Image 1 (cartoon, protein in one colour):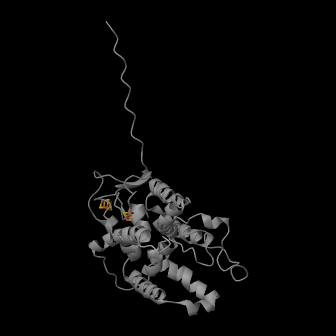
Image 2 (tube, rainbow, N blue to C red):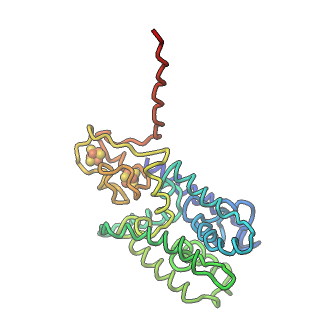
Length: 294
Ligand code: SF4
Ligand code: SF4
């Protein structure tokens, strides 16, 4: 299963970043596919990216709301909220493990054989602050005189944007070096810290900072596909917890918001206590028949 997942991660990353004409035409692909969002974090500005970034689109939706209301011109950004909600309700955080290019990068970095560190539990809550503050509140309320907000997560933090967007752009268009500001060097510092952290701790960005993972995780409890735990079969060996890249204990809560549905715990459990399947719809109660009169 791990090999199949790795293959899907690599193939999906390559297929969704397959615009190889950028050295000859426009630097960023802006064809019709760019109107569709990638299910994972994949920078819109990457020269090879064919799809848009959902968290970038989400921030731009928030940043445009006031201008749109003031001008009376409706915007289509609500589509991205529905799109993310649709994916979340179908599969929860599944895209983080199987489809996200930055998840793949962290998985590969963690394979470097050095002593590993555990992540303090309280840090897992930081991503909700990032989601609420940098993706929702600041883009909506901190606006310029025209009424337009700023995508603060992209501007201040996004390491996927720095690695997959900014660096390749600087390579193919060196004149951009003259436009670099404090924000760029701030993001380079964050990227270096996250790369170093990913070598010693499994998926630190997904667990601590990613607003997309925070959003999808809210749906784990309700999504159509789900992880099931059978307490009768569990011998409490904790093998699943030891294998989990997200530090989840599925025997405590299989719907944990940090579970990315990678299914490593299924491979680890030798007692069949964990399974992955579709949520069954609640059985319709039998209709009561009308009483016959005597
Ligand atoms: S609980 Fe299982 S499926 Fe969820 S992240 Fe951990 S190993 Fe993957
Ligand atoms: S690996 Fe299986 S048996 Fe062991 S604690 Fe996890 S669910 Fe229980």
